[in-house]
Length: 110
Image (tube, rainbow, N blue to C red; front, side, top):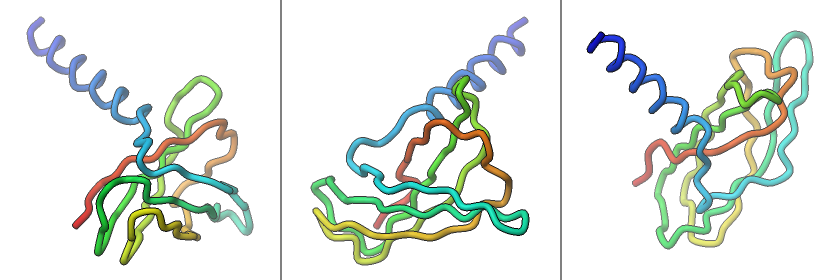
């Protein structure tokens, strides 16, 4: 029973992290283009934090209408100054068809 409770706690922690979004880094103009079985994610991310990053890496999570995670992409920004906006184009390793919402998390920044 203790092992089940620990596993459930880990799953709940993952769900909470996946659904949360980092408000310091708003996204805009997000589009997903499908071509030849590959989904291309395009958009912009803005640094509204109080910190300049030499390199910042983000996870952009896509959810369906039931808030189930259907896929993620990694986005990287270099020389990411406070107040600046970076445009990105990244391929998804899996199809993102059916996405309804998205969220962003800062993975690493220095």
